Amino acid sequence: MLPLMITLFYPPACYTPLFLYKMFIIIHIGNIYLCTQSQDKGACNDMYNNVKHFINGEWVESTGNETIDVINPATEEKMGTISAGTEEDLDKAVQAARKAFPSFSNTTREERVKLLDRIADEYEKRKDDFIKVITQELGSPVTFTEKTQYEMGLRHFRETAKILRDFEFTEQREGSFIQKDAIGVSGLITPWNFPTNQLSTKLASAIAAGSTVILKPASQTPYAAMLVAEVFEAAGVPKGVFNLVNGSGSKIGNAISSHPDIDFVSFTGSGGVGTKIMENAAQDITKVSLELGGKSPIIILDDADVKYAARNAITNIAANTGQVCTAGTRALVPASMHDEFIEAIKELLPEFPVGDPQDKNTFTGPQVSEEQWNTVQDYIQKGIDSGATLVAGGTGKPDGLETGFYSKLTVFTDVNRDDTIAQEEIFGPVLSVITYNDLDEAIEIANDTIYGLAGYVVGENPETLTKAAKGIRAGRITVNDGKADFSAPFGGFGQSGIGREWGDYGIEEFLEPKTILGLPN
Ligand code: TAP
Image (cartoon, rainbow, N blue to C red):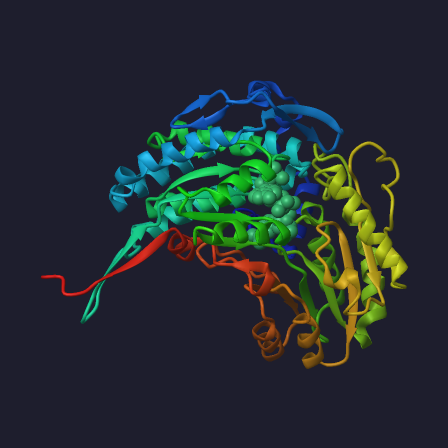
């Protein structure tokens, strides 16, 4: 049991499949504390009615009257309202961030380390609130929220503070002096699937670099971001350094990417929106960093333990309801292992219950929204229409879950590598099983994608594991149950994006290197 408990304290990247399975087992035997407060709105009621933005160190009214409803995806009921901010609201935030920039960018490294430490401390104090809010707004199962969603947000602040202690902002070369300056006012646009992880990696890096920010979180999950604003306020982040403007992507997100006074746009989300952001930013030659989608392969080697491999594959699509950018959604299985693998999948699926996110035994919650549920249903139908064999799941809601945006855990086999369900990101709990004949073919299929965000390799032989891991062209490869490293770069090849987040690579994105020649000693 001890190794399993230790694993709990080091949650992985978006996750690693074996980690989540171990976590689930532990929860089943009732060995961990669970936050029951998350079942009532209680202290969060005020926040759920907060239609203000956080600008220049205070909560301010919007200059407009429009609002956006936030829906709890498990109940389909309205849980609150946020402001549908205006371009004027955004302008105010940009001016506040610009005003704060000269002094914040001149703070010392030590001052910013202390600031990050205080942010992490305040974040920890709000643990129960984060768990409550994320479970409600995203429909993320309460145990997953606690052990992964909440924890990842914290890890980025802690790890970045640690890295900043030794980060070199200057370098003396033989013929030049190089100084890394904060990039300036940065616009951060984040998605809904990991409400704290996505914004905390960006925020931690920006603070470490000395840049000031305007954050626009996803409209479907704004409350975790508003909690972060409260955390920043409590930590004493100087006025104007952190600003939050709520609103729609088409208005506020679009305005951030085209604002002439924003020096850098850091975006996480879909490829379609990433393209628009790049087009807008190109008008002023504004730097962009894009963390986009994926269609990641799991190469199962011929010496893999079949049950372990099947567990790994199911966990990949079941965790966070498949709404994970790095999810392994294409299981590449040796043809000789296929039948045994499918039997193992069928046997193990009941161990991954879909249901109420407030239930500590739930592994998979609802999709975040009706729109996302419809998208997933369309893809399942496309899989059926393409002639793939349905092993489990299918269209419609699971029995007994008529209310809430629940999908069935769905597994297809006999999938062709160029079928739509094997090529396009579904962002739902849908697995495509594809067979291969030798390792070279497996690597070729793995790389037959426009994406390159992640990859997984399952097996025993060190040589073949290494060949497969090094052969996949993607930003993050996990071998068996490899653990997360919050200091290592995160980002993708190809259409999975531009740039890297996490650790020192993340800090570099918020800096501009400057070369000084002939500087007197
Ligand atoms: P998007 O629809 O792209 O939304 C992401 C963010 O962009 C939201 O804040 C959204 O605001 C905003 N946005 C929408 N339209 C915009 C526009 N025209 N200009 C500027 N901003 C705009 O993605 P999503 O549905 O939230 O997230 C799912 C996608 O994100 C998937 O493709 C997934 O793979 C990807 N993702 C990637 C990663 C990494 S690290 N690579 C991590 C998580 C998710 P609203 O919410 O108001 O629409």
